[in-house]
Length: 268
Image 1 (cartoon, helix red, strand yellow):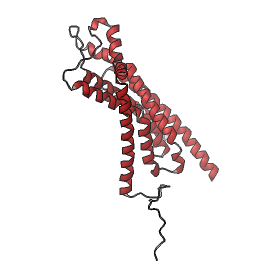
Image 2 (cartoon, helix red, strand yellow):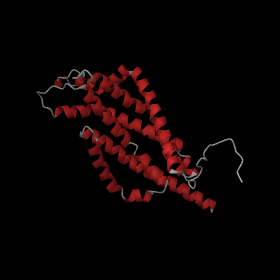
Image 3 (cartoon, one colour):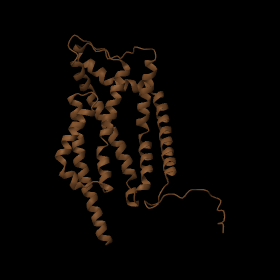
Image 4 (cartoon, one colour):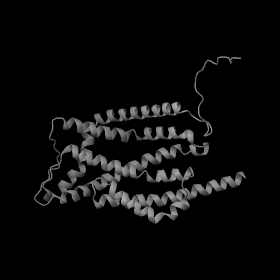
């Protein structure tokens, strides 16, 4: 016996972790999230193209400040380019980096929506805190990178010697600046990952507390490796906050654990 036609061919939505999506549905969902993220990045790129000169002045300010504060370096504070296409490629690079940063709230939201079907209803309520904390910590990391960029440049220039004049290529300067912001921004997402792993039960606060000595050593080693400039100022500016975030994530995990145990005791 045939069932009556309902007039709708919509696929059932996944409501609980017990409902299973097929591989095709997973890929379709991933494609949708990627497309939406890319559209947000494109909008961000268009916005940055309209304000390119102001953004470029903001990016080059650490170098300009260094040249003005230390005339002995002999630098003018202006960047140059060698090839006819370098100006265009630099503009596209800056707008792409900036577009990704502007689109970060949308990107993080799409990431969360993609992993939501695998979570329980009680874990889904952390969507807004996840997005806000992720964006806020990335911006904070970028701000720290910007703040340390001037001493990092001073450290790097000092290695060239007294008789060498700094005359930076704009594409290489922008590339180093972008890598610094990306490295700090991504590294500052470290506590979000730790808290998330504790909420879903992969890690416990007790485990993190027990391994804190090894964790600090690993943090400093990773900071030394992933810092693009390789200077000690940037390394410390990255390692110290990550260590503090590690401890804060343990505190948050303990609070969440106590609430979970109290809730389970009340339901028993």
